[in-house]
Length: 194
Image (cartoon, rainbow, N blue to C red; front, side, top):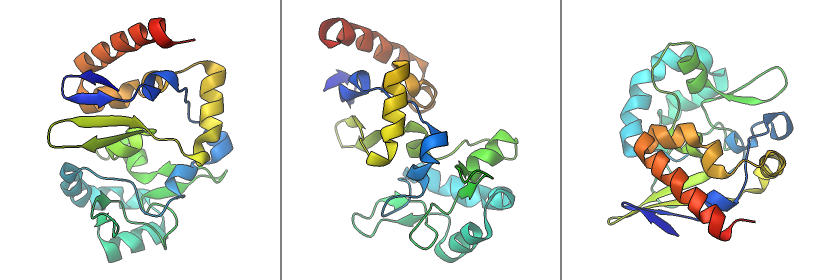
């Protein structure tokens, strides 16, 4: 682990390579899993406030799930905030394009200028998972078999996780943090990289 301010960063964020390959995985990360996407507490109010604006971008099944469960829910295992799911399958905010690839209805609304919030930060930061502790924040690389095509493409293109996630890391922590992180990554690469 490498420390930058109050953040502990897994070295895998520098060593692992990753580039989403939607043509292969079809966005399986939005469909697979036991619960919806993790949510920060400050995102709950946002989801409540944008619901009417994003409704036109959602599936009928997604709208029904959100109207029944609310715009967010909690994981029964650990009580963490998560997005609701449609019948324990896909995230309720997911849509599917003509090729069967998942798209985020929230992000589509953002791209159209209907809202000014892109999507939950946990989705934007994936495959980094953030865990908040009282004294520090941990940023860890999350390995998931549904992302094997993303790992293969990342390796082919030689794109480390932190570079693939430049925009979401800046969105979450700011440019200054990302500049420091990049510098640390370059030093790490000189010392430990192959």
